[in-house]
Length: 482
Image (cartoon, rainbow, N blue to C red; front, side, top):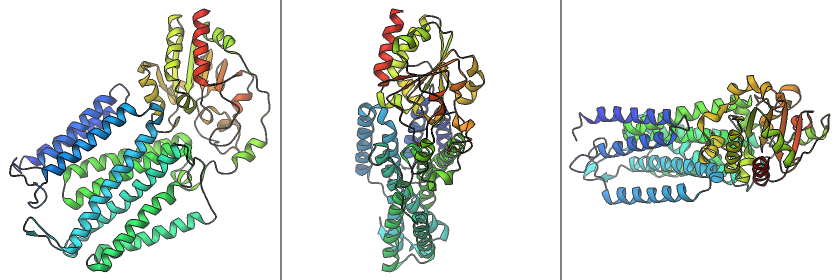
């Protein structure tokens, strides 16, 4: 392919990437968005090869077609196995793991380029200039990609383990933030040194130390964060991976990587900020606040005025069957119970009776961005029934029955009523304003914030205790029989 045509093709690839991200913003078009972005990446790979087997970007370096084909096939196989075998409830873990692999790959590419340049090897008969002769910008790009990619890899592995429940609670110790700050200062110092002194054995040793410290810093950064804050962490680490890929693109003169990485980095950063806004918490509080590790038990111990009023499934079925409007608020408890299909069956039965049913979606419900949307889409719940928090809150006082399934802090009125609450100011789905609220939970256990939910004690709230899936199946049977 002519090198004059390649920039035009890359522009087209960039458009495909942008369209792919745009389509991912809606459950209706998310599948198409994946395909469009994948097509863009495939085209980008193809146009990097000339007909003589060399790269149009990499100074005549030869491509090893065998390794490219093997790597592509391994990736396709792993992706297919993951897509068909991983349960929807484990999708957040899969996202964290795949994101970590992307960051690790970006770090390895930058590391190899840095070490290769530092020793000035000879490849394909072409003597490459030593890295010290290259611009400081290129050297900095390689070091930045190594640092951010390594951090994303190790941090994502810890996020995966937290989502798996290995250690959900924050792990902290006195002076932890100070220690992390010192490690970061050492890393930045090594980056500054290597940017202008990247040759010889000392440079290689310093680079290895930098790589190891970056991996450790990723672990140290994520360990103090609670498991329920992992949606924000995954989004932030995803943006780190994108930035690492973009830096790789600058380092090896690959415009497709620059474009793709920049898009992922910017969109991931924006999503992180939006989720923090939805929780009314700054990013620094998520990263350094150890939210959920302390203070929650004290808040819970104070108690809440009112009494808990249990209800039976047959009574709930009657309320639902004769309601005009029902709103379902799904939460992580629904995902754990794998109750999304039972929810859809219940809403279909209510729809046959002329009941208007909607799903109120909180931005941070679940364990990853859009977790509830993914689960409900997998259960074939109509997209037009999914309503975002801002859109549904104004009309909640006209809802006959609000069915809260496994959600906790995202419906806690303490965020609006109790200035001493750690979640005060956090936007919530205002379920307490509905005429009747049915909360489905296994027990009275607190949410990740560790505080009592004021909603449970409201006069218009009834508690349906038990496994969400079993309770929903009982409701379906009762509604059919009523």
